[in-house]
Length: 307
Ligand SMILES: NC(=O)c1ccc[n+]([C@@H]2O[C@H](COP(=O)([O-])OP(=O)(O)OC[C@H]3O[C@@H](n4cnc5c(N)ncnc54)[C@H](OP(=O)(O)O)[C@@H]3O)[C@@H](O)[C@H]2O)c1
Figure (spheres, rainbow, N blue to C red):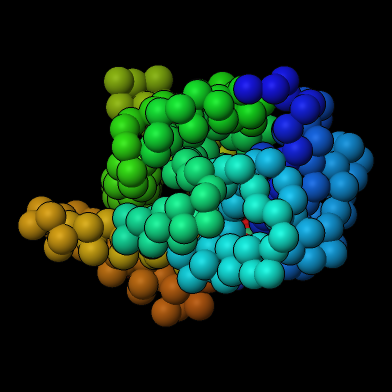
């Protein structure tokens, strides 16, 4: 495999995640040509050394394409735009959005028919986690494709696990995000319970974060829970998508998912209340309302474990 500056990278999708991932590649010295449907969101990548394309089809001549959009329908749409009428096709596509096993398999067939290698490579972590250099990839597909992609994956994230052939990375990511939803709802429930019994949220979470139940996740959600800053890191819409992917997979494999089912309904209730534009951690506010209390920011400085 040539060195990192030899292969030309095409980057599709510079939303919250895609922007920070592409920025790390460009800052690391990779030759990045990025495209985003809303061009203005890609423009600031120029300061990291990337170039911006007007049309997705301009990326077809790149060696490796990374894709980070929202749903399988969106992936399908951008891939169609990439390949339609292309004279030259990329050598490899690395698809990082959280999508279904079925969508991923359809993409694999489409790319194989065009002689393009394909790595399924969804991620764990939000934009702040990427900036902090703590993102992780879970990858599946041909092992050789993974080995070839690894230097580029490592420029974006320190951890990249290879879990096997075909679409296996998709089920790992789906399980991960089902857990994310259930843990967040559970954390909201016990935080409100402790508070209603008289314990300030910062004191409760300080203990939890240092206990055996504390995690990178509980630590980085603590500022939102304590000070009620719900600036979006991950939208309720995307979390509902992932819980639906989990429930679909549960039906396909005959696995009951009672906690995921309840959490999916609670996310839906939250969205039905109109809480769609803030972070999914507003599950806390919904839990407080259901418990008959109104939360106020505690205005206490708390660490997120990342900065
Ligand atoms: N946020 C997180 O914490 C997190 C963590 C792990 C994985 N993920 C997954 O990563 C993916 C991206 O999440 P995100 O938070 O970065 O979402 P986001 O901020 O909403 O960004 C979505 C990106 O996809 C593009 N897009 C969506 N539909 C498109 C279409 N039909 N055609 C072309 N471009 C389209 C958007 O373009 P525009 O700018 O034009 O709208 C934007 O660049 C999702 O699959 C999500 O589930 C997110």
